[in-house]
Image (cartoon, rainbow, N blue to C red):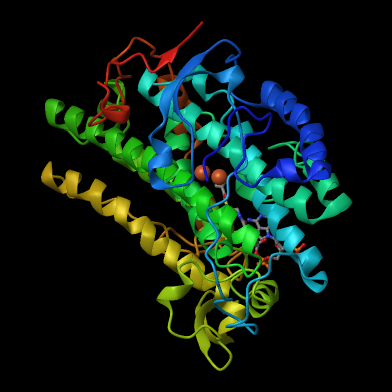
Length: 474
Ligand code: BYC
Ligand code: FE
Ligand code: FE
């Protein structure tokens, strides 16, 4: 179904046929726009950006690129096409027809999952609000804004579900999604990572590579839901998510490439020398990765979770790529979990599989993260260096689950508080590292030009040259 942009709220779900719903969404729309002006990308009221806009939910629907005034961007409601005869793919209702309406007994749990998902989307926009002021190139600035408008649309996606299926409670939750703010001490965003500031582009690329990838896995898990409107919404969101991870993965790759160039020009791997030449030494990249990956690992929830077991049993939330598993019931199976034994060691606990679903999804995520790492390490190896970037252990720096509050090093070795205090600056960005990265964040907006700490991309957007003027700043 083609998306009609002449409607006040572009959509492919025929909201016009439900005047009550349309009115409620039209009431929320100005609140969203006000939030966007206040909390969205700074100083963009008269900025034109080369953006892609969905014109339909088919693959070809993404081919629509053009210069758009940011202030006039049209957010809409798009669901992937229904799959006729779709059946529940896991849990106690396995094989039954999927639900088009919310079953009363799961109403509050589903609402909570949708609100938690919805909360992260505007949170990320808030976190990235000031990055445009220190972008390394127009190409990157355009990518930032593309990510921002799509995260704004992801909020619309969840708000549509709340309005269409959760009545008055849903409308109230939709308002609340605009009143919690990232880092706000009174009304923070729900999940930890989304309250961390993102003030530099190294953090931005780490976030889009690793935190958006949590988004990918959570959306894949929700795309399995028996509640069909949620599944269809998430399926379409996933097509947008791929670009966010591309931005992160290629961004880090370009930083690594630039660092390697400087290392080879100067024939050194001395971090101080590399920094003096305006590039980011590899150990610092590793520390930023340790920080953001450990934070992202918390987003999967506790390793033993009765919430997750209930979500699975009731068919509300499955595993990412549920079809790739052979057992969709998980009633008699178990999972071996590593836990701290409280005496500085590790012990194994056998957990019912359903209670370990969060851990199963987290492990799938970690495997997916390795793909980007292989590519970066390949370029380091080709340049003749021994250092390899490495994901931190899932025990490292956790605040959720069995390893919460346990000190370990990035390899997962249990250490005491004294060692942690002594060595943490080797593992996560120190104030000095942060100050150095911050010092590099100078805005570069001449078409085709790149900041000194990042290599140019391999190609431009939509076959355009790299020096195309992707953003017209007023
Ligand atoms: N911070 O039993 P547990 C994205 C809470 S990212 C703070 O393990 P469960 C995006 C938890 O709420 C994807 N609190 O919980 C990326 C629970 O609270 P209650 C976002 C946390 O339910 C980039 C308690 O701890 N989507 O889209 O199994 C840019 C016990 O935990 C945290 C979703 O998250 C935390 N990190 O798992 C833009 C999907 N973790 O009940 C966007 C929807 C846990 O004790 N959410 N808690 O009060 C869910 O599926 C689940 O809520 C979670 C938690 C996986 C998050
Ligand atoms: Fe999103
Ligand atoms: Fe995203």
